[in-house]
Length: 128
Image (tube, rainbow, N blue to C red; front, side, top):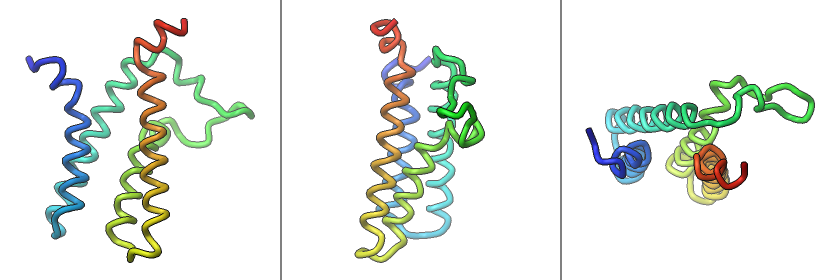
């Protein structure tokens, strides 16, 4: 068994490590490794988040009563935003890629934080 702090930090460590590898190295095979590590971190976070969710996934609807994205894509949206933002920052030349890349990264982090707060046990204990 792993210590709880280390166990809880694993998906974040996977994701940060993958982003650091992509930012500070060159090479196709290294990028493939980073993408796999990033996907594993996102998958672990989504599995844990789904397990800890207190509300029904059926409640994920917009005002008109239907989902804009399939549930699978909806769960991974913050990681898609963040990953695409980093790819834009790394691959598009500086004047054109900076603003869109940063905006996508910020959107991903914001959605990720909001989901983490809403799916935490302590949030529902206080707001129940």
